[in-house]
Image (cartoon, rainbow, N blue to C red; front, side, top):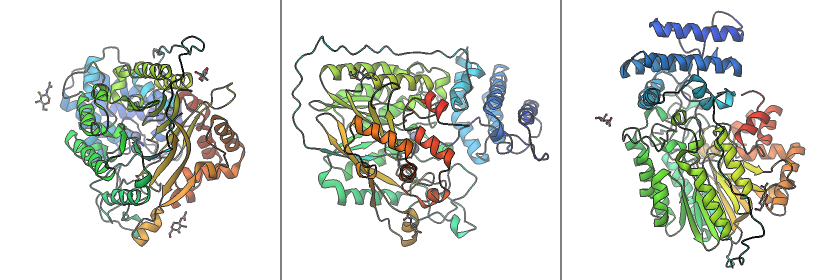
Length: 582
Ligand SMILES: *[C@@H]1O[C@H](CO)[C@@H](O)[C@H](O)[C@H]1NC(C)=O
Ligand SMILES: *[C@@H]1O[C@H](CO)[C@@H](O)[C@H](O)[C@H]1NC(C)=O
Ligand SMILES: *[C@@H]1O[C@H](CO)[C@@H](O)[C@H](O)[C@H]1NC(C)=O
Ligand SMILES: [Zn+2]
Ligand SMILES: [Zn+2]
């Protein structure tokens, strides 16, 4: 999950009871003028102005702010004065607070300046349409790039069906979005004016004291939560376990003070613990958007300056993953953090780096057309797999239907999955921290054609109970037979001082399905659309029955978005159909 990132803005109609939208846009314009001439500025205008703008006005405001940034630099502003300018903007137009704004600006400055200085056709429309695609900002010049996908050929080339050995059912553990916070401290302030709390400060109310095992407030995972998870899976599942899928996000949400060195230390530490816990088992990891420094940033292939390039991350990934992946994966992992490995005859795992689709990756302003040729590569891997009669699992951090997954990337990915629906047995996602499911059910198709399971999250960030999942996989066709989600009650654990992990539900049983075949998934989608009781159940499972979020509830609008997203597997579709107003 991602905190609303830099460049969101705010305004101040403090003296007027109700501000009209126009006043809001005017307010942004006024503050911009004040900024440019160096006048004393008001406090953050996020809550009372920016947050209230309609999408259209929001995009207009975004254009004007980005225009001012580009202009400032083009007029010859030095690195130091750009730092000052951007920090003031962050203070004014976001609600991150002064500490986080100072950090974010310093950390991201080199990337921002490189892009302005080197991307000669950079326009405010481009920046806003990418970064704020969820606000439906438009760039009339955006290129609608499409990857070449060869059609399925049914008759020719029907070589003998490969004999796939009969395997026993594979038991796979999925862990995702752990967001390890080494600075977490029990009893510090869980409510603070920074994008991540539970690290310092003395709480004024007892209910605002950081819990022992984690907290429903804006906090990540304390180290002892990891010990609890590892002990639990060791004692309960290790004997029957065949493999672990880790779907990304190791680093905490303290994105304003990351560094290469501290990210690397946390990444190494996490993988060492996985290795020690699951000795002898296969582990298949992928990168999350938080592994980068600056957060979300993955530089394009053409940027080779070692101070800006994110090559270090791919190298670090290979250092950690070579314990489990065959040598053949080295080249693509070091290239851009993705790989394809044949795990058993007839069964392949493809780990992709879908963080390239996450629109908070500032480098997308510089280059956004299939970064590193990853999707083109994916098509080739799937073609080979199809030809060899292999079945495939795809691990991908950001779900393709996520509202912040780059529109064109998402469209291409959806088309690839549809085309290779027979070859792909299932997909596994993370990132949203929600135990949710994406069903690929193309318009006009008789049944659903594919499915992506989201692993939820170990971190409670924000409001969830921690969880992990166990899947039973039929290796001969890579289909998921069933899965179970395990969690514990955070309120209870923090009261009684130890987590009581339990099985929250099994998918088949909870939704009364015979199996997870394409036919059954179709039945699931239909039931979910019609049955309000089932919707409530689905909602409670997504957040693992967390007291805080169950109590907050999911009203009609929230439920509509939640259930609509199940079949909105392309970002553009999700934005058009599932959100009334973002
Ligand atoms: C990279 O950063 C270091 C330290 O800030 C600096 O000394 C060096 O000149 C930079 N290298 C390039 C190629 O800009
Ligand atoms: C699913 O895969 C089959 C077999 O390759 C193909 O014929 C069919 O068109 C695919 N479905 C969609 C919706 O693309
Ligand atoms: C979690 O524990 C709290 C405290 O014991 C309890 O009040 C609450 O009902 C429990 N929640 C669930 C979903 O069981
Ligand atoms: Zn996450
Ligand atoms: Zn993420």
